[in-house]
Image (tube, rainbow, N blue to C red; front, side, top):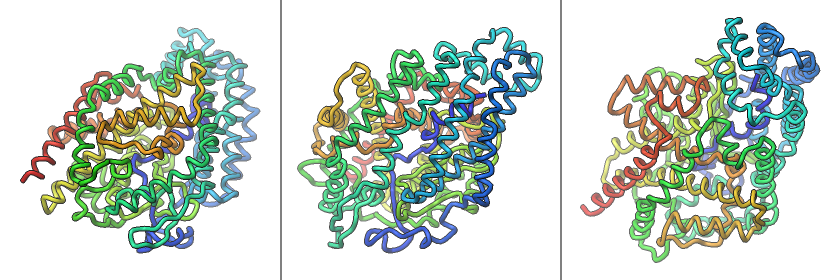
Length: 631
């Protein structure tokens, strides 16, 4: 009833990137030479995609079967309101196709990301995307036809057919969207436009990850290395300031060289989103995006306004960084380097699995058993290889299968946190899929980052508890402060910027590269304060962030972070009752609206209280750091 008609609109949002991305090799040659090929990585560190299809002939068979079902939709058109049994029969047909398509699409999405240069999987991905669009087009009559049925009749159908009671929340959600649902002909036209509206993101992703050529620079030892996405993030943690600056400026160079191309893609995405919002008769792009999950715009405004009213701790953090580093000017390439390099150490992937199993013990035996199951059965693709998609993500729910996690390991502490983050998503998907029936076996993007950032919070507590020196404790407090900076303030900055550029686009303003740089640079300065020197390179950040193509996605990192901090504290203080509520949250899927699901877990995001609490926590951490430094 809903999955296929929405599949192509939301497919990219299922790839949830970590806030701190990393990349690596599984050898001591992590920073020099070329990246390895897939055949150089041990099997245990790679995905087992045979859990989806044990051979690609079966994929082709499913593809052909789905194509053959497209004309069948026509036979249901005009009949959904005939009777309760007719409606139920169609829902079963539609769900059967949706389940097969989910697995079909997931397989090629994952296979493609292992080597973006591989034309075979690019081709299969394009075929699957096109098939999804055709299926969505064939089923585009469903929403308007259901909404043409009198509400009283629909609810009578539910009373008459026991099986339809499962869909009560789904029908309620559908009826909520009635003012923004178009005629059957217009819905079909919107569905047909789906592949065209995906072009800006598809082109950006391929250009940035596969085609863009980064320069080489000299590392700390004077070795020539080729910059990559993964090596960029690792280099920003290097204690060698000259190396950090070389990689930073080198990494941004191609984005600056191709500013016109990137601005064309950026503007194309804005226009695509605005087209969809206008077509569905929303007042703003933001209202359209938030309405999908029934999130009041006040939640977004609470976040941005509360941050703008509370820049004190992040400005204080910038000044403290500058003081401890002993530098005259703080630059963006100084914000990730540890202030306490004497406690820096490497973390192998295998060691980190054991750390996570210890750190997440507070969440109970069921959680740990599911985590170990993922570790032992190749749900995780660990190391950076030639052509592999950068960053990290969890694939989301695939009904009847299991979720996957993509990493790019570089033996950094940040990799351990990224690992914890993505396994939070993974467990959320797993518990949802195991508990909910298919209609509700997914979850809103609004709650998606709660489980991931909660895992990070427990990991940090565990590492601080195990700290063997004052210096190590300081380094971990620093990590906590950086988490708040990147996952809360940084994502809020992105969210504020996103709202500004969407509004300007709607007004018909010319968003040239210079204008985008001006807007982003000013906002970066505002958030960091007087301590920060904003380099020209930093003002081009709009050109490289994939999240800006996800349609008002990033604010949810910050709101989820605030919610997870509150839930972590509840588990610590209340024990098992809070654990039970949290597991209920993980298992709830989309069976309720996301704001209500969080309330069940114990957090009310319609208020500014959780957001202000994060600000207070940051001030408390800064107090602790300054006290330790004064000893």
